[in-house]
Length: 205
Image 1 (cartoon, helix red, strand yellow):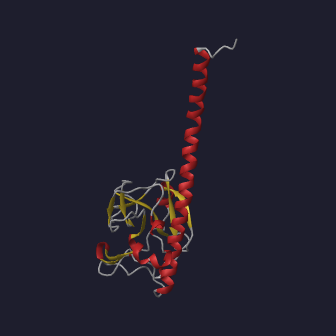
Image 2: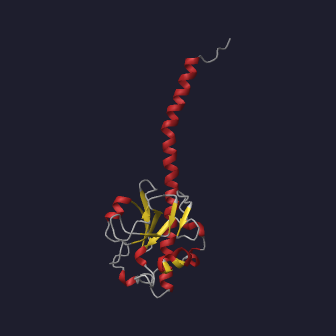
Image 3: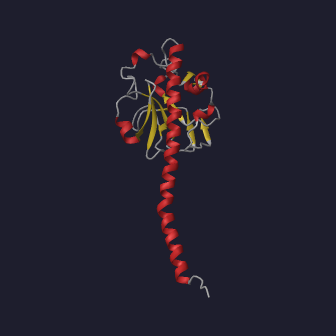
């Protein structure tokens, strides 16, 4: 005559399953986030290359963050559309912003450096390539958020905390405590937020 499981045996099996789940679920979550980070990195690289293509078409001046002061006119993510032809590239898979400040009511997860400026606001209409002394080390665009809030989208980023530019657009750390960053030579890479802000090349002054 076959015997069923005893209550103790059943509890042991349940305990083993619970332990395995506690071990494996964080691993799966981390693997999923790494996949999203890789997809985001591809987005940033495409945008950085689009910036270089734009410069070739506009007298070696890179994308401005906007064509009129304070985000007026066309924003950089609208100006680069002829080169990427895909609005999905503008959205990080790890971010779902619900407040689209200065992004034309569309989710834009990345910010172009505010120092690219625009006419009428004391800045340039984009940045002359000749001014970028270290293009492989100078930040062009990166994972961004507004006011350190991942639910807010903002199309430009400011310098590190404590600067005089403001805090509206700030570097995100949504990818394993770091951000994907595009550079002015067209390459992109992940950096921790602390290491990124320790670099000197986020401005042109």
